[in-house]
Image 1: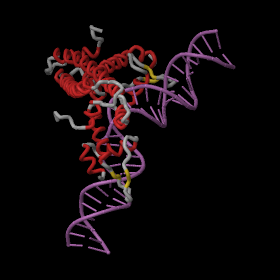
Image 2: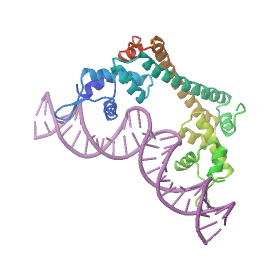
Image 3: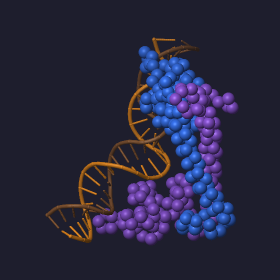
Amino acid sequence: MNIGEVSEAAGLPAKTIRYYEDIGLITPLRDANGYRRFTDAHLHKLAFLARARGLGFSIEQCRTLLALYEDRARASADVKAVAETHLAEIDAKMAELAEMRRVLADLVHACAGDHRPDCPILLGLSQAAKGD
Amino acid sequence: MNIGEVSEAAGLPAKTIRYYEDIGLITPLRDANGYRRFTDAHLHKLAFLARARGLGFSIEQCRTLLALYEDRARASADVKAVAETHLAEIDAKMAELAEMRRVLADLVHACAGDHRPDCPILLGLSQAAKGD
DNA sequence: CTTGACCTTCCAGCTACGGGAAGCCCTATC
DNA sequence: GATAGGGCTTCCCGTAGCTGGAAGGTCAAG
């Protein structure tokens, strides 16, 4: 397969696939004309990457997961550890966003949103929150 | 105030303050020796920026908010619109994270996490989810 | 022979800074 | 007066994970 076909099949932009080759995540073959040639195995790896990225794993985590995926002697504990780390990262981000959301929603709620200049949102941003 | 003092007072790294000057968010005065000189008004703006950034507003949103903050003839509706846009962005991110978390937690839950190679996480990443 | 779709490489830019080098300024101390 | 230190300056590179675009080679169809 050429890059266009594998891009379509894996659901990844061609640019992204070239980038993954750059950083050593995948190593396609080359035709005589210089075109990248992908096998089914390459396609599977790219689809794997697409899904892992879709779950929010970082590129480096994906690299680790891919290595474990290809290691028939892996321990599932190693995979689980990576996933649990990422789960904790997600939880941390969600907590951070939830806190932002809480404060922001309060401010938005307090703002009349009319033609007048008085604005609790700007007031809140201009002074420390009372709860801090 | 010099940059060190205002950095301490605003809770922003000196590097960040210089960056904010670079991108035109703030324009300190200069002493004869080239040092930046900050007034109380500068400090207030920086503290405003620190809080807005802390709520997750982008730099461009901060620029808009700061302009509104300094515009005595603003309409609070304009401020509210920016805040509501950001609130929607936060909600979108939280929903995305929640969906990732849901799928990932299922996979983690199904994984034994022992010395054996069999791993539902890798299996899930290697094939399309049944729910899709 | 030309057109158009594909492919290639390389370079720049995005967000919001952080690290570090090279060097000036100011104060204190000896 | 010399020196040590801390603070300040500019400048440039690096981060994550790509995306866009330029300049150009390749291939099949008409």
